[in-house]
Length: 274
Image 1 (cartoon, rainbow, N blue to C red):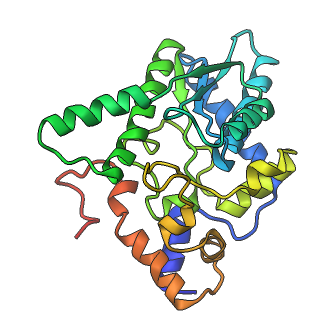
Image 2 (image 1 turned 45 degrees about the vertical axis):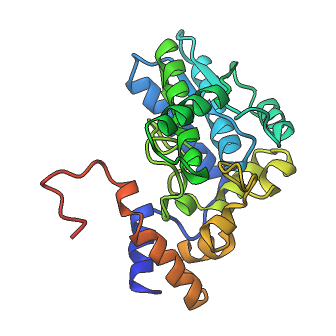
């Protein structure tokens, strides 16, 4: 195993082999315990896109909420937030995910008008705001809405970040990376897929090509193209396996150049960056 590979695995707490049933239970219990120890909150909020990660996190949260409601007088809720930009190209997948998760409530907050208004305001101040910049604005607008919902419903915002994205900082800082609790942290992509299979999720939801779908010029851009390395390679690396040197170097480059995204704001007492 490469020296940095061992550090990355340790930092992200990835296990080389999991029992999907055990990991579902760990995540469910984790979410239950958080609410039990923080009685000021009575709901979980999660954005459901129709992809693997939000489907898995949403289903785990629903199980946790259902179990809590059988043992307590508190009326806990799982609130799913739909956040398309205009019309979502894979809307049918989002609907299928909601049918599988069965949240207690669904709220739709279309982010198109807010994103377009912010783009217009920034351009009026002289900024160019290219397609990549707009792609960064969208998840921040989504998070503004999720926290507004959370404020209204005494909620905690669930994130969908996992090891196969976290290693590269493959999330938007203060966008989808700005959450309260991350039940999938420690898992790679294939482990999440195995857990959805265990939960009897529709195959189409975990077999689909992963995409953040943030760019207007390149709609539905596959994550693997954006990352420059396949999830199979990433998962093998995170499980401690040997992969091609060029792929290992790409993964390590992504890890090293995204350290700031996995760290709280830097203070004078931090030394990790030098």
